[in-house]
Length: 95
Length: 84
Image 1: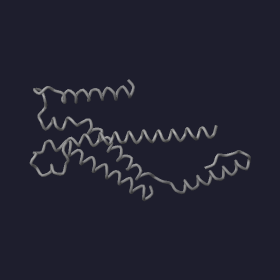
Image 2: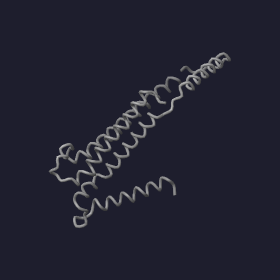
Image 3: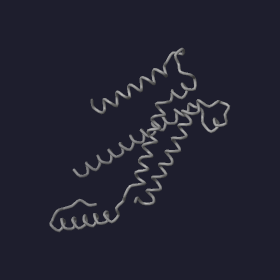
Image 4: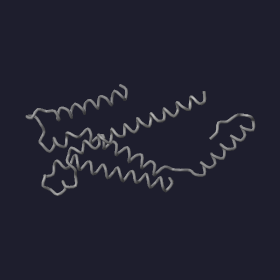
């Protein structure tokens, strides 16, 4: 089974469980506070996932290892290579 | 080591999403189990807004992404015509 099929199966399972509890007839409904917390659950999970994504992006941004000397050296190599190729007659795009 | 701005922005994002997550969790999950005469309810908007605000924000985000894609595609079309 592909990963997409697995995810869709899990989604369908959780979705039907939620729908069964949310759309239950008045006799079979869960107790009132639980039901009030249950109904917005899909939106809540989406917002929670959004928060997790934002936090991950922020954390990886903050802990990224810049290598400034390597970057400067690379720029130097690029400049030298472009000068060399231009000398040999290759027309380069500008940058 | 990331630059100081990067670290500031990065950890700022982490703090912001943490605050948002805690507030939203309290709002959606914890508040229904607290008696309606407790003082904590004054810090939270009526419950409908807990769904309306994220949905509206999501639609705005989609709108922004769509407009951005349109803009970029329009620009690249003009460039392609120029170089032909």
